[in-house]
Amino acid sequence: MTTSVVPGFYRFFFTWFDPIVAIHAAYNDFVDQEWVMSSLVPKELRSEGVDRNYRFIFQQAGGGMLGIALLSGGLLRATNDLKVWRYIQAATLLVDLAFIYSAWDAFRVQDRLEPSSWRGEDWGTVVIIALVTSLRVAFLAGVRFKKTHTDKAH
Image (cartoon, rainbow, N blue to C red; front, side, top):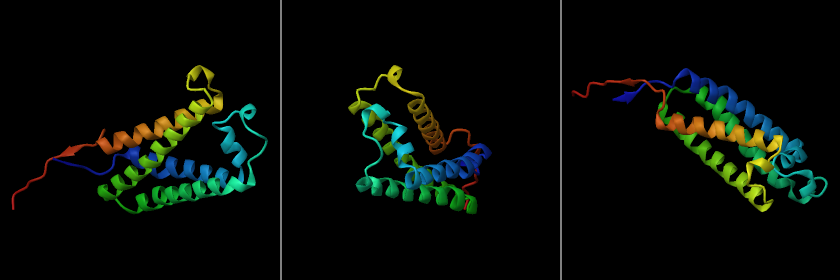
């Protein structure tokens, strides 16, 4: 049994939603680091503004997001090769997992691991990353792919 082409839901999600979210994240990493900081660190737990000596970290993350946007919005639209799709999703899953770890670590050092201590911004961040990570894992596991029989006769 082999899997068929990429199901429409995944195709839409990974070629439209992913690039839009990645471009939005890149924009904020380059232009509005304060907003990025506020997404996981309450104002009362940090100093005012983002230290200009550390902006390069955000800019590097922004470059990574632009790469993801290009791969998702460009390469995935240019190919139906399921192997390419799987590699792109596996690589992006690594980014998602790093983000999950960094969010957990931010909550941990702030003594805010209990969801009842989370703000709206925290919930938004957690829900979005949980959604995209779950869909990526489902895609890589072959969930909702149609199975087709192939003749192996030579």
